[in-house]
Image (cartoon, rainbow, N blue to C red; front, side, top):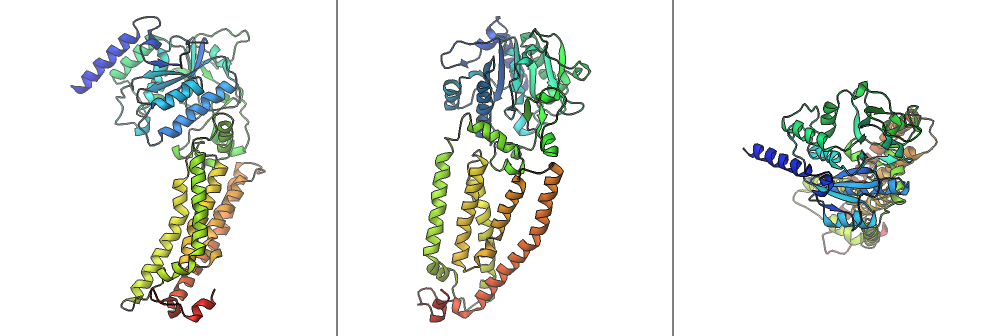
Length: 473
């Protein structure tokens, strides 16, 4: 019964949208900072919805792609299809600072929710692009597109155009459409009757809806700028999968202009995350685009706070080293073996935490060079705690730190002949480093064991240290 009610409500919403020739944009709440819209005949559109653990990252990504288009001086409006629950402060930033037209939409009911990944459940909001009937053509984008040059020639394409980065399935990270309320209503109807959808998200639905696109001709921009009719396949240069670059470490896409890079990779390897570089070399290109558009003003205060905190930790652990060692090395006459084993366990977990905790504290979308610098500072600061508290050998405990630094250097080296050589270099480094790391771990445990066996290193808390103890300093 609840499902039938939702379908009725959705159908009524479609009827309202279709009430008049300009109702497609006017029926929903549209905000443009007091500006008159539309300003141009065509538009680039991006979608944003809430409900994932990474809403802020996608907000940043949407701003970067829209601002990068503005910097390219495209002859089109910039439109954001935002769900009703997008925070008002984000809407204000987009409209006032980024000069984006924000069109608020109700989340599209997804009848494939059981077969869809949770983070894709609202991607059917893309279908609202067909309701933007103020425009002749709309280029619908995902937030993870990186524009290398202007692509306004796409507005000459037909009623639907998309690129195939998979031999048989076109990619919906970028596609061109002619808005039409008739098609929009038909799509909503197809959702209601449960049209076949292989992946339960927008791509599966659109691939099913435009099932004959593979048989359509390739798009070639007409020299006079007239708009084409029909459906077309876009050249691969408009959706260059980043994995193509990683194979040769350069672009060599012969099909169409090399205009747009897309990142259809695992979510945690999206280019806006600071750890994406140098693991994936193109992450730095995305961050350079961000640096030149919206900057990092929101993250810098947190970076400075963490940096000051880590410097204070290094200073305090160095100054309080004698007291820390007294606190950690205490006599236990009843069960010394158990006490020794527990202390070894505490040391290992403390060192492990020192290398893990900073990773999760760094703002996720900060510039990679800043992120890795802060990580190395943070891990060095936290690892100084077990070094000074348990009197461990500095070089051996810092061996993972040195290994991470070396890995970054090997991956960031810019003069590899191709991606295969780069991968072999990383593998070779890991192969050589692994026995060194293992040997260092064994020596740390041996050093800790020797220290525990020395009775002089077990002063009862509150006792004055023995002369032999002080000679070590």
